[in-house]
Amino acid sequence: MGLETMQVNDLSVKMTGKEKYKILGTEEELELSIFHGLALTGDCVNKALRAMSMPLLREATFVLGSVRVFGENGNSFAFEYHPPLECHAWLELEEEIVDLSFPGVVTMANEYTDFHGNLGINRPVGVIIKKCPDWAVYTFHHKFKYYEMDKCLAFLKSF
Image (cartoon, rainbow, N blue to C red; front, side, top):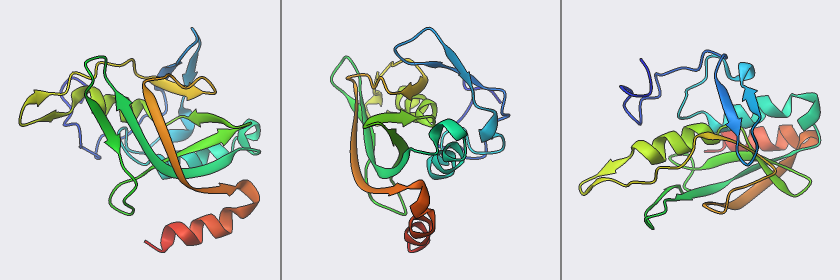
């Protein structure tokens, strides 16, 4: 099942690990092999935790909060902070956002329809590595360093 036939909220669509996404703000691409088996448009917590296992991201901070994607037409799509039902997870490195699960957020934003029809977000699908576009707004609620993973996992299990 490809993106063109996928139900936006279909968490059964799993990543193959061969997905390549543009790094927003650059011409580079990143293959997300570490996300093999995770939901394409979900699993942001697991994606952030797996990404922290990468040597380059061991110094990153795990962040739990909300994200909102704005379209040029003024409409927006968000994952608000209402755990366990709704939230978003990403990493922060050197006070900059690293969101490797952002392709799922933008895919959902671009495809989401309400009773008025498609929201018309139409933003490029890609990952964020320190160059957050101005049309994506993040709000953090909790932050955990790599050495605080036990505390982080206990917090996540409390929901």
